Length: 408
Image (cartoon, rainbow, N blue to C red; front, top):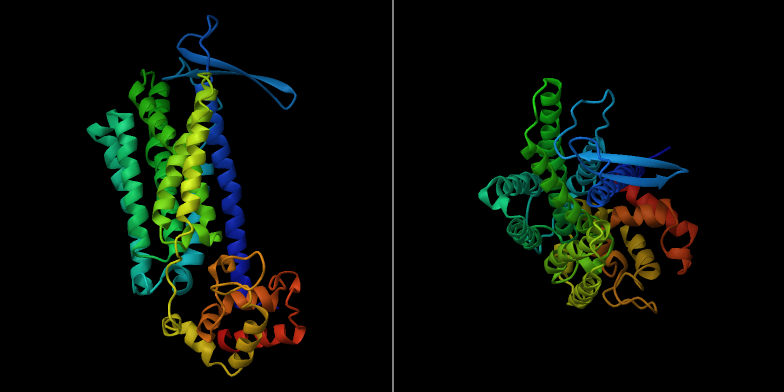
């Protein structure tokens, strides 16, 4: 009933849906607690050892929340831990990375025009970079530099810029920006799993043992939580970037990604100041708009990676699809129905670049995109959109027959 490609696509849909759900939960709780923490008020009625309180209204009721910087005198019977949102987000994101970029390395991860890697080399670099990112970041936080928040953030930004450039020298543009997002998300989830949660467990253990908890554990956790707060928006941008060639397929994609981190800081700074009742620094929106305009300008640089036809057929699967008996007929169908939009200079009014940066002007490009053509135009009727080029049912059937004759 279902073939391998369809089942694989549904597996990726399930992983992506899970990733979005868990990310919404993690980001929502993170933003909520940052706003809550910044909005705490000191009042005369605070319980002993309490740092501040907040009254909130939601869902037809009122909430009265007290925060203790170290810990209260007693530990309540029920204690809610916010951790699985982070863990599930990272795990589902890593699952997507494996499904899409590791198993589809020849199509999405490796670009021979950037660096001619084998699949295992590309995967090894990917995994190693994620682990290295955490070690470098954690080392900076634990070093004497960690006592100076502004200097630490500047150094961290330098690391992110270096990784943005480095990834674009190794992977395809799409994979490079996605990996920068995964690199940053690994730091964020590592903060929760390796630092914040263990520190909180130490505090809980001290309370149960009747000891006064050390306040430095809370201070460290707050530092890491603040970093996560400023990194969240850029990570979302980078995870969405693979849908937009103007971000990932431009000459200055690494610089665009770097500037997005600055926009994340300016946007979050406005919200943080507002939640802390320290005014509305509207200048941050002006700075954000300027950075965004600079990014838009950078995106108009010539797209990189216009490989000749021979280079497009370097992948083993592309050669097999190009050698199939039905391929000449499929190539004629795709060039007639799809290449008007999927071209270096699209012929369709309103299009200034090929959708998703997918070009289907040559037999090699068509063979390279075999799986997408099969799913988008053979199995489903997603392409051409609205069937604007009038692709016939027989033509779709030919595409299906061609792909299955090779994929099995």
